[in-house]
Image (cartoon, rainbow over all chains, first blue to last red; front, side):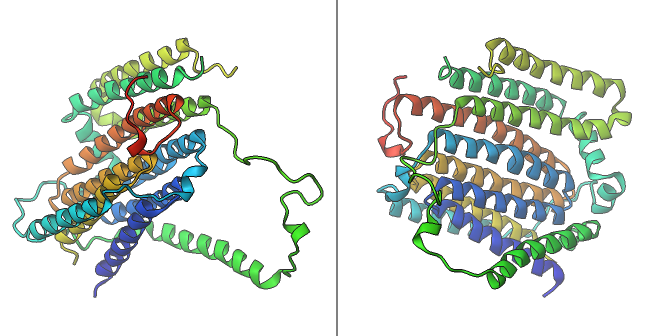
Length: 171
Length: 123
Length: 100
């Protein structure tokens, strides 16, 4: 076993276990906290995939902002009685079979990927020489100009929609 | 070569993580080992010399907190978009400046809308 | 040497776990968290492809996915709050009224 396989083994086991914990906790607050641990592990995995910027964004946006929003909503809804009841829907065996079958299909197809198309120009050395941020900035603001501007419209919709939906409650 | 890459620059971060977890866990373990443990019913009540609490300890949060958190999420994403722009600014030049101003202008519309709606008023 | 397939299988495992949670949990907030889990599983595979194919497009796509996830969380949670105001429940099998 090489060092790379050891770190991958660590991340893969931890991420699988934590994902199972996230979907199986009774209390939504515990789910959110396990999700935070999962995000930290994902950021670590991104570092090993030479995506430093995404590792930082994962921590800043997902762990720092989105999960805080989830925690606020759980506190806002003030759910106390929910925790003692049965946590799955009636059809849960069907969903379990569906998910396992889906996994089997995906693994049997994706496990066989061997032929890779020709490699692009962004090799590890090139990204490291330029810096992760510089590389992403150069491509994001030239080639992906339109999606970038559309992202701002999406965020505008999010602001307006959330204020309209939540503001009714204040008045 | 993909698949063999190890981010050696981040080795200090790993060391700090290990030291931080060692200190945190060490403090807890040391506390368990050292502290005396003599509980009795009176000591375990939430307020040792007060009335027993009535009702739910958790109270309903105000929805204002949600609006603030939601605005934080959106403007956090906006700020994250500005990091690569700031780093690559020299190469992008005036073109990059204009497109980022357009991006920020569209979000400014949302900001003004929220302001006019009075979501920032606390009372 | 870690082959690309391992990352893709890890992503598939996470996605299936998220899918199971989304289909079977009763709590609306936890269903939302499972949705985030599925998005993140896809992100792992995109970053892995980006690294192994030596292309930057995957990373930029992940960046946009994170943006969409932020917008989706803001709107979706606002809808849950707006619904909760009228009918104080977040169990999906009891949510059957669309009238506001």
